[in-house]
Image (cartoon, rainbow, N blue to C red):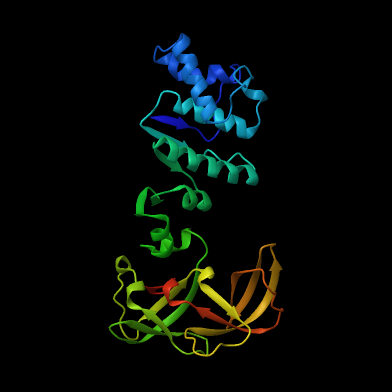
Length: 289
């Protein structure tokens, strides 16, 4: 197994070549064979020509590549990455995410990537395992754990979650109708398939529940469009421009929530607005979240 440490753990008294060649030296591989393997893996990570550079003289991104080359040089079956991007700035992290993904697909190597960064987990993974206090909460594809969380912890850990307290009014074969407390709005119609079975998902009429939805599954309207369901009235309390999008603070009764919408035209603070909760993005959870 090859490993890339969070701190890279390069030997400062060694050159790039010596750092990368060290795993080969431990395995008794030296001379021309070692030189060939080091040259191949340095070319793979884009560091050809830096063989004699001292490790401390490299940039953060270059040091990360050296650590990766050292982990790959002896052709391991599994590669363990322990938060390898945490010491890089935001722009370099984004660049290295793309490079790591492309490298993994090119080499067809199994990679176990440990991270607390949600963007890294969602963008790099084929499957995600989410842990809480040493206990496995859920394993699934990025889409599954994000849109079909198995537990409240997974629901709230990945991304932002818009939570609304409610009460079950009635139940049919296809949907559950939920009244949102403290709001004078029509009941929400929630599809039965969106109720997580692992969360004791068999609601009963009169039961207290929590309606959860990702903010990106909410549309913001200045006036309610005709023929739409799951519309909730709200008031706009604040607007922040974030370049490619706006961040809105909205009041729902006595509580406030934060939503993000793409930057088209800004709404004005104080406006009455309507939130459309798209049914495919809703999950329903027994009890109050």
